[in-house]
Image (cartoon, rainbow, N blue to C red; front, side):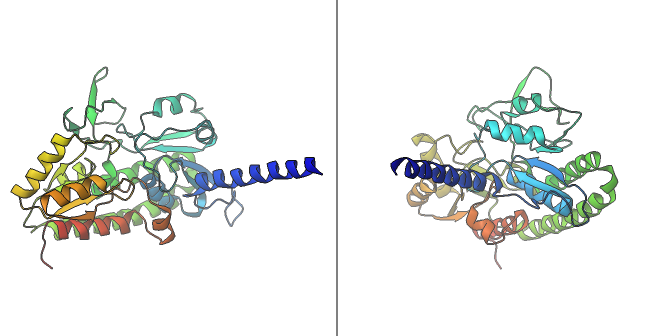
Length: 333
């Protein structure tokens, strides 16, 4: 009797682990049925981070199965694909990555792709990238990419990868994604174009809300957990003061924390921003030393499962960011 019980226990454990693993992979999945309501085969699209997933599902609609590799609640910086993730990429009809140095592992993934089968989309194409100094980016260097950002072969730059946080950049990303879907599925080009146009209008509305909402802000500087908001700040005439550099995984030095506290006091900054996927401890310490409070400013690189359960998406999180920025910059109602 012992042997069957042992076998049953092992099988049960395998099943549980399989369900857990499936949950991690499918947390962001959209339209997982293999065919449309009309019986047509859906495109299999693999994206790397949440903003790409959200943009893609709005363009592809019911015509695609969209998967995001980085699971809900996971910080995308420093994330590495598993062999299973690489296999998903190789099976995809379309593979969409952020570019601009966000995925340091991208060369390994692209080298394993059959370009005759899979359309590869660099979402940063035709976006003017921001280059930071070593001090600003904590020395995190990224290789030049094929995006038209004026890169020079053989040289390395400290590139800010957080392109999606500027709604105008997001419009270009949507255009890049739409072109990739149309290349993979030419028969549905008009469908993708129409959806992309509709989503672009939503991004234009968001851009207008940011312009209007931040135009008369008494303060123009804000303190962030890490240097994720350079594109947003540049678009709307603001200045971010990051506690950390480009990666939230690099802990700030005591000297840097003291410097930020001093800046907050000198410039009468009353709110220190933190992120949902990174411990708020550092921001709380700085806020306590500076006599300030804390607020969330979400980089939208990934959402938590709770946010997904509430129906949050790129647009809703960006609007919450705007409301908190207005509070932090002391915009009067």
